[in-house]
Length: 430
Image (cartoon, rainbow, N blue to C red; front, side, top):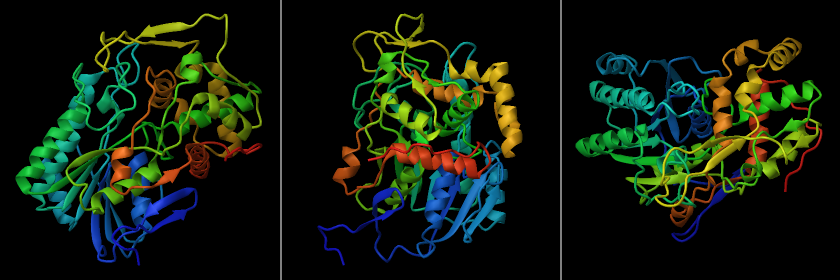
């Protein structure tokens, strides 16, 4: 039995120093909104690992989940863009009650012509504000009053999609208001709604998310796996499209399963309520270190930035940028993976792989759905380092090696028949 100044932690597979909880946390119920996306998928799995703690899990999404739900979970098909009265009536009819709520629902608006993934800020606000507002109002209609609501936002809170931000990124930073950001609208409504109902809230802010889900619109693993498997099929090296500044830029990624463990800890821990926390794996990660690893998994050569070649340049829009001082940044690349995925050579190669391995061939019908996100990550003008000091000071210790997590996500994608099996010719982990 741990004393007041001791913690008991455990490991599960590649995930280490995970929290344990007091025995009085049992028979709990939860709603997972957006359960078919990458984050919601892993939250359902994590809560499903503890049936003695989580007695009932309600998984809400527009489409049925692509994974087997835990035995004590119930799927509720719902469109959060519906009128809140209709949505609330559905929840009430299904008998939904919840001690805790985890909100992940998200719609990715198409980028503006020639813009990167998040360039249509107004449409992103319109869609995602509606999702969250409707959901909370539906809770009123259904007479559901949870103890705490966990909203997952992300690193765009720091303006990383708009240009250089302060590094590392810490939770006390003021809002970046260079353009509309739906995170701000969601947070404002969350704070207002929770105050009105005397309910606690938590906000988690992960970085680039690693995981596998057919419903994911913002996943590093899936487009990377297609890029590697098609390049290997064509007998070509794994070619890094950007310049050396992007190649060596330091990041901290966020594995969806570790995020889920963290967010469970966040809602069940006293003293962390009504606060915002960053969420990341802890691995100091760069494309330079990752690129030869992924090439090794596929038994292929890799190539890094090229010298004495022409690069396309896009300058970030704001001067000064989100950090509040200094010049804008330049994103330099020879090609985009979105353009690569649209080429006839790649489209034909993917059809060959799909037929050979029994995969769906329509994943590349609209490459922008997946590869715009990969391009945004590769060409980021920021060192994507989220500080997790705040969470660690309050007792969070969870860790996963982001490189191992990426391989696990590739395996999950293969199991879902979204990509071919990974040869795993060479594995290199600490």
